Image (cartoon, rainbow, N blue to C red; front, side, top):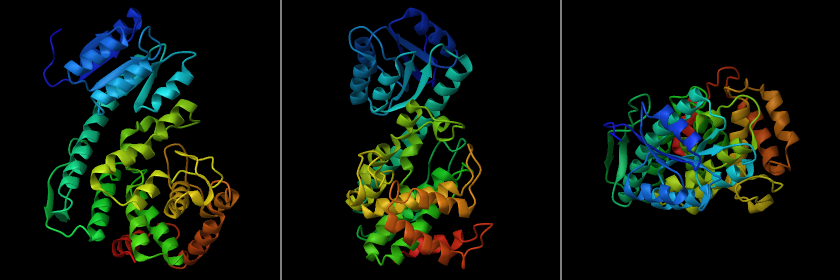
Length: 382
């Protein structure tokens, strides 16, 4: 096979020659395509050559697709994994998703869909690697330097970060962490009109609640940082699930639920406090124990995560999304009350509704002009 210079490498793993060759023919024009007819051969190929994307059939003789994926992840945690699913393999697909699947291709193949999925995975890998590289570099310097002036420039339609300036700092100054979190959140959100400003508004609502609860200044600052970073793991989730119109399948949900753990993995080089990471990891837990990732209930859920859950849900409900129009404030409040004690901490719902009533006297209801003051408040902290 003659390799194309600078073309991404795609490995197709399928024991059936028909699907394997079909995928190869579809992809060979734009990618360097490698093929393996079993899991062990796939593992050896990943050891020998850098792969950008691996497509895996789950049902294969010998080592299964799931076991092959586990091994491949150990060799290269950054490879984009796409599973091939057929009728009857849904349960296996959901199990495989726990090991970091980006997307799935259903059988029989749809050529435009395949090309779209592979292209998105390649582009997303580039974003992931750039973000990971930056976070690791920032983490290495964290105890020696600060970011006195950060400028992230998105190039190639938001696919790359560049030009980061930092001066010396004291690591105990959490203001620098907050400024870093704000710039990172802004950079990741600004290209999407549906999510632009989401993290900032979540910070705004959460800080109002923290202030009302008279939390310690350090706790308030940690919740602010968590608010800006709570969805960073979604950079590893395909937009076709996050912005999907209509009902999400159980497979779709399994992929979306990965984002909390992806957030923790991405942020690990920064050595953030346990409280910040707990807020991020558990902001989708439900008060009745039916949430994810760990099924925590009641006060087992960190306070910051319970606050974040309410702020995140309220802003999502009252913001425009590709799959629905925003709810009016009255209906959004009714939803919060409806799920009080189930999804949300009932005491915090009462606090949040009081906060919203107070905010209505300050904010302009129709055009969300309170965001400028949100920036100021979440910059100052307590």
